[in-house]
Image (cartoon, rainbow, N blue to C red; front, side, top):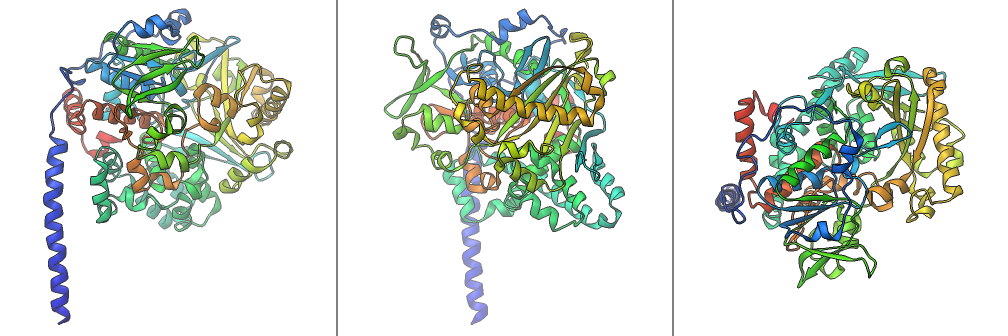
Amino acid sequence: MLFGIFGKLLEVRIQIGIILAVFCGYWIKKLLFRTETTGQLKSPFAEDSRTPLTPLITDHTKRDETMKRAFTKKLASEKKWDAIVIGSGIGGLSAAALLSKAGMKVLVLEKHYKCGGACHTFRDDGYEFDVGIHYVGNFIRPTLIRTFLEQISDGQIQFAKFDNNVERLVLDAMSPLQREYTIASGPDAFENQLIKQFPDEEQGIKEFFRLLKRAYQPQGSMAYFAFKLLPLWFVNVLRFFGLPRRLSDFYALCQVSVKEAIESHVKNKDLQFLLSYSTGGFLVPPSRVSLPMMALLHVHCCEYGSCYPVGGASEMPYRIVPVIERSGGRVLMKAHVSQILTEGGKVVGVRVGNKENSMVDIHAPIVISDAGMHNTLLDLLPERVAEKSPAWPLAKTIRPSVGNLSVFVGLRGTPEELGLTAQNIWIHAGCNLEKMFTESLVKPLPELLEKPYPALLLSSSAGKDPSWKNRYPDRSTLSILSFAPYSEFSQWSGLPTKKRGDDYNTTKNAIGQHIVDQVTTMFPKLKNAVDYVSVGSPVTIEHFLVTKQGGTYNMEHDLTRFGEEQASLLRPESGIEGLYFTGQDVISCGFAACLSSAFLCASVILKKRYLLSWELFNLHRKLYGLPKGRNSLFL
């Protein structure tokens, strides 16, 4: 009788499996091989659009003609637009460029006076600083994402690779226990380095890196992207049968924290720190960072090395904007979008400005938001429309990211004279990353200033960019980043830059000077070279990047965001007719992730959800041949 019951149960499972297989087969065929397009649009990858490399443009006036073209009613209204993009971050510009290559006329509107979002640079007092790009992952090897970037920039963006020791860590800084480690890059280099340094932990190290490799295997991590293109109802069917976790190690491990994974494999405290230090890049402590996300960061930036754009981060927007303009599009700055226009629950355009006598309504059948889901759903849309989006509950529940404190230092002298290299240097006042992160966000500022600042990241574009010495001879720069509690600066929220009063300047400059003193004590060559110091707070980020509470990354990058359900809801399609999303909230922070979000967004708009990937692959194959393996294609 027992075998009979098991037999019937088995038959039921087989029948359900057959039904599900047929069901999945039908929809996979429909989704992957659907070839309908919008109107007479062409494939953006029909031909190689790279052009011979041209010299770097160093004339700031000429660059500003592209980067600072200001909004006017005439420029914004003289054409009929196929799509409007809110925000000129790399996610917005890349989506606009891809649609432009397909033949659409796209208008990009940026609130800031300069385009590029976190990819823009600023100049002051003879120095130039990158505000968001301190390194990017693997753009040296010919991967799909690099081919995509080449095609939307005419192949004009070049990268300089870092040395093999990509980063340097200082623990218990400015104490008798101070010690340093370097992070090796290259296939398995970091793992082998740690085994030599901590031979007693060899088995745990090997097991941990095996776990990392499980998490970032392309067949698993690609499921994270695929979920954002499949219809939600279909995703829910897959989730009902538990298939995501069975088919993808990314989802099987997505709720495992970095802290949990590390502590279950190794015991040495310094080793635990070395394995988890990169989670600082997500601005959440290791206990709240999803292991697969840390694995993707590791393989992208460490296994295959980090690099830096030659000419600085502004080369990215500077080279992409002409591709948009070539198809009749425009990128206009000082254009504050105050509202997304709707009619009958459908998006029909945007409103620029919020004063009665200067508001301009611009219409288009498609609006793409690179402004973040918080801003889009909570501020730009009427609530009755916004709540129709599947992402609406997440916009109400996922917190804004933590903000950065940025100290920009101008230095007299060459990078060689000052000892500045391409290495990023992480300085930690202790050796417990979890504790340092928490304390830096909850301790009052006076208390923080009594001791060395808990955590700092030092980055020198002068040391990374081979073109720097020709552009800025005998000068160097250093950017110093740390966490900062928004609550300490919130009283100045909404006030114009440079008009926040003496108390604001005194507060931020006190922190900045404390940090500069700490850094110059540790690196004496810098002490007498300091010529310029400027400090940016979370309120600075809130003003220029228009993020909630000055968050560096829009939505917080904690464990819950990357679960099956949440990941499927944070997608290019908003669920509101005519409105689409691109940028950090769709996939994650980071240059490559924002490029990928733009690709997914354009795939949906062009009604080529998976066909566009095939078209990109075919072009990539023609240019570089078949890849040696999946890692060579995706990572």
